[in-house]
Image (cartoon, rainbow, N blue to C red; front, side, top):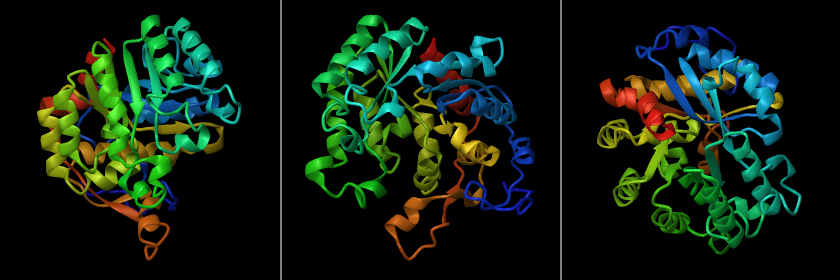
Length: 341
């Protein structure tokens, strides 16, 4: 697949190829409904723009991490049908500097999201969480375990989690292993909790936090039948899965029903940008369903972070996995339907 609209528009950090994303959206062969299981739609204004982009790229349902206070107004932007958006319970990250944000206030929000009908709760445990709170954001800290038990007792049966981070970050940002641990350390509490809460479906965001090592991720799936994955974090997935498209295709075929489409689009009033949102759909759909072999349109800062000799506007090489048939339908739609029920 070669973009036909190359250099059609002025370049920006979400569109270094100058693509006309509206035209490109019409060129994908897959035309059935798509569910995006992992987004961050923050405000009504951003939701209005996001909806335009999502519709262009065939997304019929969005699952979003939205601030509790904004979910009604954001939902209104999706129209009268509540089927088009569902929300994930999350802390109030805007108040990250307040002492109770990830402890007592978070427990309160788990309850309030549930009262709003939320079925999914996110337990974010990236290593950089240590910079926000020295204890509460560890996946198995006492306060986090209290939140997990509360969510379970309230009836949540889908837990999403982010453990690990890109290998590029462990090579540069997380070199203090006494503070952040190793990458392998991140998955130890997750495995214990997967066993303890075996009747909960756990969604491992970002291909389980380790797209660089699909053999490791396969082991996690093999050991834990209640564990599924999403494809979110477009730059990260394009960079790492684009290096191994055949392996990624085989991985999805082997784990049909357990790989869910997600983008990690962050849409708020500070980034009202059509190209920004559209680039994530274009890049991930190109990675998943085409045989494209060329540059990603998205600036990837991790490249120059690891190799300072590279230009700061460098983009990753994107090679498509060309997933087809029932496996493709599973990734884009059917696996999410199974999880969401």
